[in-house]
Image (spheres, rainbow over the protein chains, first blue to last red):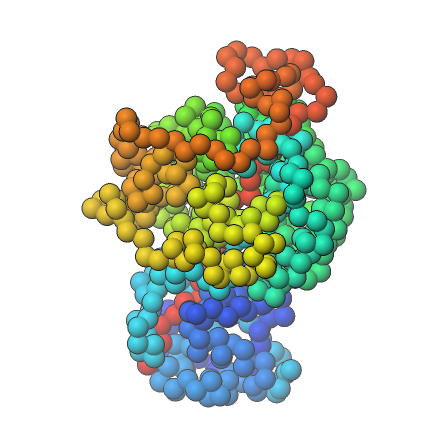
Length: 104
Length: 427
């Protein structure tokens, strides 16, 4: 899905299994978290604590939808979260898991 | 992905959404960008050295004390540290400390004049994860560089870059302090970087340390600032600046980076004796927040220092608040103001709207005395051949002394490497 795609379009990412990249560390901050990518040396700011919780929960959830539910994100916000996760995927903060299921 | 300059998130789930810039102004739980000068000792005597380095300080932290700081940085999740000096590689335990840090996932970016980067060290670095190397170069030609950094320093830096490239070290940084003398060489610097598979990094000349002595002669002219700004806008994120030139945002479009003074908020400096300062450019008692030994570690200083608490309070624009560009440049660099004797809530001395020049013309202006000096005792005032010759008129002397002396350009904060994954849930 390209950035800027219609908000009401259901992103297929919701049905996919993802996880925090193993080369990324998250540091809690009052605004959410600071992510650091040890390979490309980039800093990424997660601007909401709720998003941080979702990202942290990805690896233990069979799919993104479950991670969102477990983090208590209302279904009405899933499209926005899906877009944010796509952005994080582009920055290699999260990575796609081939096999669904509990990763770690 | 958005950038930091975006409007505050207007999310529905968080009532008083605060922009990231505001968050940063209030300070973070740990610095993003920590500079750590390991030693005041240096083999060079650069005329603009921010830390007035040259001689080792007998009180410099021991290996064990340095390891304790690294342990603390790991616990605080400071993801990388900018190591400088002095010339950090002249510390005998430098390579040990580097490995100690990267083993604990504290990445190291270190600045060097190249003196110890022989082929073996370059190969070692190429094998090490989480290490970045910045080789300081203040002229794209030996003539321009060596007037500032000392005779032979251009050849030394180029040799280091050659060794790194040959060893397969990826993406070294060529780190340049922009001066009146090298401002016309930006394309040449870029070529040097390209030729070595390196990235160019440009930073601002500050009137700190010995820089105060040469700032009048060396800081870029108004026209050079304009040209530099245009060049940086054209280069985009290809060239690193460590957020150095946010005062140029007054020309219009912001440059990549945070575009705010991070001193004590997201940035600070630990000096070789463990003193903590608000930023790498403020080695002066006024900006000393504490000491890692006397105050029980780095974290207590970062979190409880009275100075940092003050710096994290909302700053008033002072004389700048009525200027239409204040939101862009936010008054510029605190250190540049302080060391030129300007009020901290007024314009930057290099304000692109010209207010700095007016302020500098104030007859009541008093430049603060330097209170730290580790310069070689044979420095500028008793110059011998081989040392930098900036103020000399005419060609540099041809005699080459044993070893020149001074400091690598200090490691300027290399943070602010966006992207930001900001977003606004609207549902």
